[in-house]
Length: 445
Image (cartoon, rainbow, N blue to C red):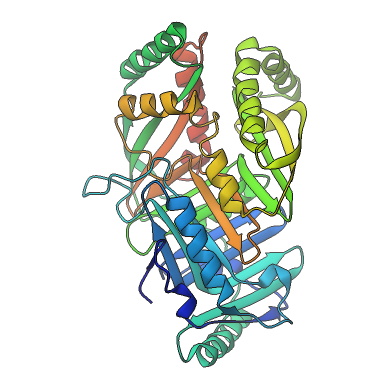
């Protein structure tokens, strides 16, 4: 069907029908094997979801993009017929996300061509696996929606029952690399940002780099996702192929927000160091990070800002202890944050309130965003922006799209950033960014 703009009011006139069945087991990746668009993959904890084809699509741009998407999705779900027998984990969801800035710079030279300012879709085919429970869900729209949803269910139940999971192939290899900015350019950018902090214009700003690589063979993003799931099982693994353009994918350690009922969960993630070659070295690096005044200051700025952003919605906000978040190549300072809402709130309302956190933007927010736009020589697109899912009840989970790349068959552009505060060292920040490329780079070269 034609995409629905977020400001349209005709969504409720559409007939939307969902059907589903439990599967003994299913190769979730099989849903992603062909380049049917849009495609989406999500894995977090014990849940993984693969989705393809669009029963309904919502796009939006402009200052009201969060509100427009929420309004359109609420109308769409209100018009959706779902059988009572369908498990709660299998009920239809909308998958998608937003650009970091309001609006993307699409064009022939942009890797973000085809990515709107906001885009969500309710898939025709959704396979959800949680623990040992696997469900197939189909959704169709229009006057023959019930017949079409039943036909899709029968077709894909047979297909998935006879299909088997295959091992991922080898990485494609890299034949050329191009960095933006160069290391000298980076030193200039960081020094200018530190000067802004010293003048009092900023408390913190997150500056990013991009690394564009030419690939020696065709890239299979589903293969990359399978390998990332083995290396980073505790991260949010995501993949989105919109109607046209490349594929955005990654394995991010950072949750922006989860909403279930009136309970909100999020976290402050900032400050970085590497992993040690031995357990003793690993512990030494973690202790050094916990003792670092610069990193603790940077992380506290993030935690305090998230608390302030949640307080208008919440009856209570609880901030946990500062801990170490260990990943395969890097360690971070992490603080868990939980809130109880005063009233029912849609997850997209919280997404709008929290994006961008100081972990990927800076403080004060407007000055930091202005600095990012004026400093970075590339478009962030959907990098460091909210990506995730929402359901009919307004619950959902969104991650921050870091440790990520956007790719076509023979080219990928990776992104990574570092938080700049008063005592940042440009060369140390450069090294930190190189560490943050590793999760994706290791799966390409």
